[in-house]
Image 1 (cartoon, helix red, strand yellow):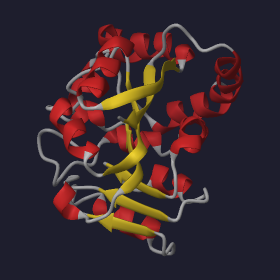
Image 2 (cartoon, rainbow, N blue to C red):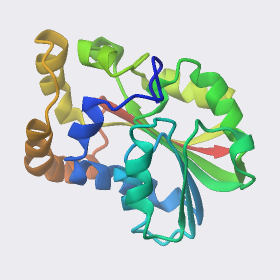
Image 3 (cartoon, rainbow, N blue to C red):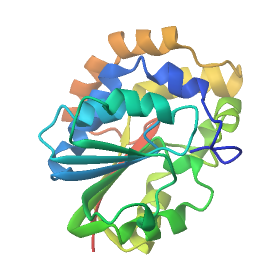
Length: 235
């Protein structure tokens, strides 16, 4: 979701991240035990992460994507799987009568200006004991020109993301920093040098760095990271 014009948004960050298959699988592995059988994905984009969700044993996936540019591509990505449904709109309880076991925000919540109201709203669509699954950019001092260009209102800290979800009526199951190795490359390339992101650089990092860091961070959770991952249960 983009704060400026969600109907036309087709960000370079989204195109570049389509090359981050290992990265997305790593994120999904953290969320997998909490998915349940009925899942909603908010801000699904062109369906890169949605397609990975559909590789699991879920029974139902409802995706929400307001962009007129991305929505047709999302529809095409989900076309052959009868478990999936795409909605060309922002998430709202009126858009679906379903109650979900989990709702995912993967690189989406930072695009929403009033993130507190968003989480309070989505709580009503989650089943009792269901889960809210969030992945966001971390560390405010890493905020860059690229963040601004792609419509990020903020980068989060562990403390403020936990407090945000608790105020919305969730109890936090786990919250941790993610991708410590990405901090320095991001700071140099985007915060200092103000470079643009590219599919080639994302692909290289995804192939050479992510598999090793997935193993290391699985053994020793980092005290800091380029991103934040949070799992919360409906209280």
